[in-house]
Length: 287
Image (cartoon, rainbow, N blue to C red; front, side):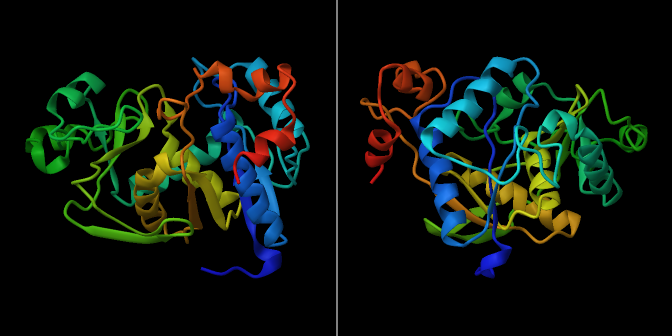
């Protein structure tokens, strides 16, 4: 997919649940360089929906560390812009409307299974950061007629809502970095969460709603989210929206080959900065 030079809009979307590490930095730098090469814009979105883990000090740190690294953006929580607010915690009305659209389309259903229930019933292993394969327990066709009727007017809060994937459907998209990607719905991933029982959207719904509303033309992010792209493509289709292009970056690992996480304090940008490392040194290592 090729965009007119003036039409390119990219984004970086850190979550303030800890200090950013060099893996985040490389992905965000790639996003900036692709936006610059296209003569387009880059948006910074604060994905702060995790109330239990997001903290103000992490927001301050991520903005300061990204600026120190050499990143700039055209719109964000610190600079404003036409797509404000840029904090997901202030965009709940948009997510509620998106939820209503999916419900009206019959694309989602309420699920009363706990995470432990799903994990116990999962037919296949899964990455810790990914959703376990949902067995379909609460799918309407697996309920009695009485229970189906009882759930027709189920309130938004109080249950987890899942997107009903077209089981067995082969899906594909062309990634800007890794090329052709394929997955079979219901095999590599199952019915996934779009709304949680605490009355908050899932990552999948919020990400699609925001990227569409902010007119993002290419999503640059880590390879750990490749499977999420298939889920989000289903949401775009159900909502009648045109999806952006996708470019997934290789994951950065530590000396033992383990994927970096926010617990890797030694490789946090804040730690490297305090140790006297220069942004140019860090960026040079990515080449």
